[in-house]
Length: 273
Length: 151
Image (cartoon, each protein chain N blue to C red):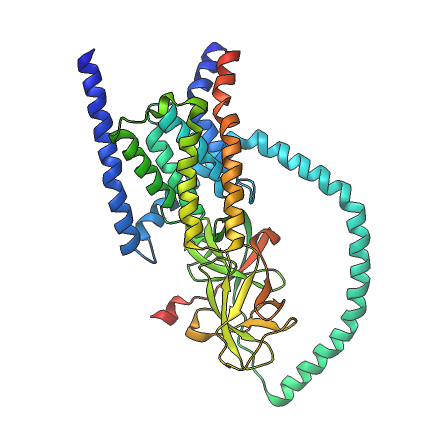
């Protein structure tokens, strides 16, 4: 009995010592492996899909009930939504004719002054599988990965070409995306229609703030359009981000506003090299 | 039937952890963070064989998804080491399923994370998460008791 108690205590101390030993190992690793975290991400690329499969199997009855509820909710609002969409379609069709004329005129002018557009980036459509906004971090997972040709650093946009974030880690069949609302996100931007550039930083939740303008006299105001600039080659130039709400804050897209996104195959890694 | 119930009872802690981690929803269960409740309970309060490494793995998964760079994994290891080395506080025999120790575990983690990016927005969100996790601690840790009564 005493021997058992002793061995139990010894095992407990050994386990605790191992846990205590793991702490400095993890801390040193975090400091040393920044920013790639190759071992940690590599391990997650194996563990996360496996845990997801097990999770999917275990939770299927709950998820089916959840889907059923959301289907009932969607069905109940479908008539109202249809009416709104019909109105919007009529308005859009009315605008379309004006746009068609403008596009033709634009093409004609481009031919006359011989403008050649750079080819648009190849894109991949992906579904948002998890919105992982927690604490000051705003990341989400998409269901496309290396298998679809995606890589770290590629740009994620919405279907109306608004910037949502950049890929920070890529597994075989999933990618982790850092949204522009993430507190660690700090990207170079430009105020549309002017030569003023600045930096856009996320606040961890709902919006992002813009500052450090290249022109010290410049004061932001509501309604100004913010687009990406290609400073240091991290993001392609000219992607629409959002509209300024006041002199600091910008209304940007949040991960929970999109269930499906597009990934532009823009690789900033070459720029670093 | 009895064998099935026995299996279910044995696997319940693992199942609760997987379910809470998998059913993540922003605001209510961001990054499956509620899985920290069974991880804490079945590691420190009602220890189960082989649950500690399982809990460590799920802390890692929560960290990976929320981009927190092993934060909860380190917190778990720190608490595990403290729990093992000291004998002043016996977590297993504290009333109310040791909710005060859980509050300390979650509270210290959330406090550090709030301090890392101190804004009103984050403070309110993190306060909500702290309250929500503590409110859910008692019902989640009582699932097993409910099971025992019926079984």
